[in-house]
Image (tube, rainbow, N blue to C red; front, side, top):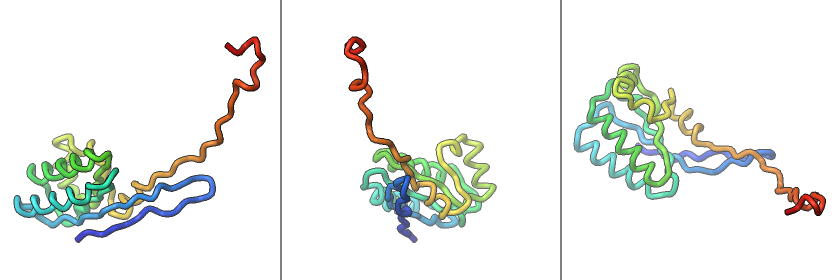
Length: 143
């Protein structure tokens, strides 16, 4: 199941960048066929600039090396377009599997999909207009 969620609007002093976030709920177990099909759907989603993907892993109790490889392939596809993949709902066992291989450092991991989606909301601080300081300089200081 795939859902589309969007970032919130803007505020007065800050501007929110609207960014479409795709949430993909992973099954309890992945076999090579389901991995291939899921990777194809992720590749279709990453055909945009700066894809934002959340993989909801809440149904998975544990992760084997094949599943971890699948997560890395998803991340690679997103990064090819300057995007990111975030993980949500990891069980303690799944988190431990990622940690043992050092892969946990490659992903931002959240308790819920909603938290992961909100993490993609990027707010840019308001920047004051450019002020030309050379105009106020005395002529002898100007080079």
